[in-house]
Length: 371
Image (cartoon, rainbow, N blue to C red; front, side, top):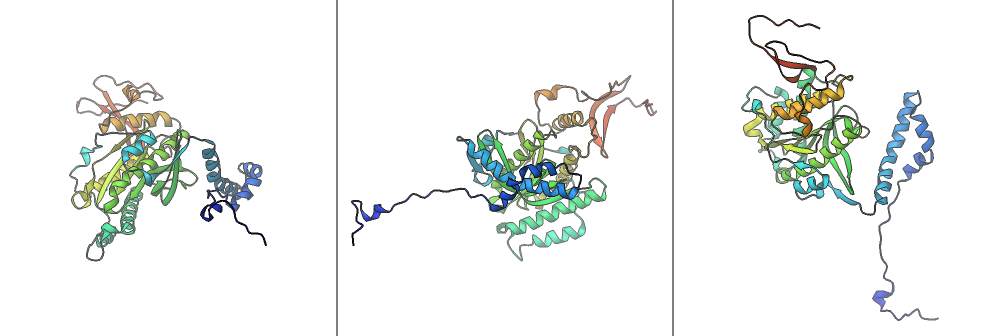
């Protein structure tokens, strides 16, 4: 028998290099082989056939993203959790984090905003440190936050302001910004439609953390807001996004505008600012609904939403872009003239309708309105 000796040392003779090879899910092959049929079924009159075609194409989405990403040799992959600071996240996402705090003077020192008694009792008991330490339990934080948001949605529903809003947990999001591909998973998205198919229907993104991890929530939320804003802009929907970060004790509110300027409030403490936090959530929900094309008249949607953002920036002292220097009535379908002592102040939204705030001298008579 011949020996199998070699000139190499035994420790080097069989050394092999290990590499990672991407594996395609077998479930992707079927829609891939019937791709043309799936495209044809998209226009089928049968809603069941259309739904099945959409589901098959949705399965292909991750594969197509991987292929597009792999073609770019200079591409860099990031995860939302991987950023060390919000400034690092904003640099990669091409966002400008504004130092000026987002304030709402009209909501300060409120005492009227309250939870419903049932939800309030449950949340109070969950926050009771006698039973467990909520600071170290992210699952407990999520329960409290979900109860809080559901309570405010019930409040809006009672006022007749919402119809199809749903709270979707654990939603995967991704964004390609230049050569940078960033992925993450939002704790909740508040949407009109399933965000797996229609991320652009998202109104608010929410990220919850334990107290010791609260600072990391901001950089993750920045990724989610950027992904939502980009998708809305691509779909010709108003390119803004709202967000909330919390550990159930501290609450911070966020707004990303169409110019990629990211604004944030100061953190509010639940023990000291409970009514203010509730009022902020209610106001954010109402503003997100107002800024949604699903609640704005279709005919003048784009003009109305552009003016909405101008008015939003001005009323919140957030500064603005060069386009904000134009009059707030620019682009409205009718030429509006304020005669005599009447002065147009600003547009506003009242009970779901767009109105103009007009200042006039008080002469004791109601002004006549002509159509």
